[in-house]
Image 1 (cartoon, rainbow, N blue to C red):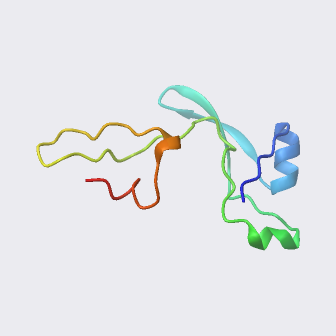
Image 2: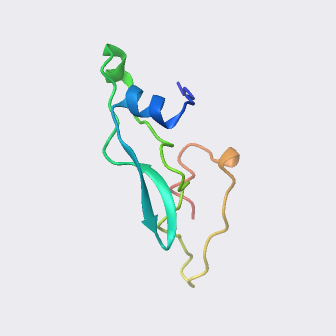
Length: 89
């Protein structure tokens, strides 16, 4: 199950017990949580991940390449198949 939540910085800080600060990264100011989020509700034990508290977006650190060193083309998220996103080629 996927649940999307939105709110002000203050509401997110209170709901997930985090402090969201501004950080300078590569000469650009970004917003991110200072520590890992948590949920005090018993349902919190069923949460696998909480993401999106920063404004950096997803930045892959690894680019796969073929044996000749050519990068594999990007695959749109909607086209991923089980077992395919990490085991291409």
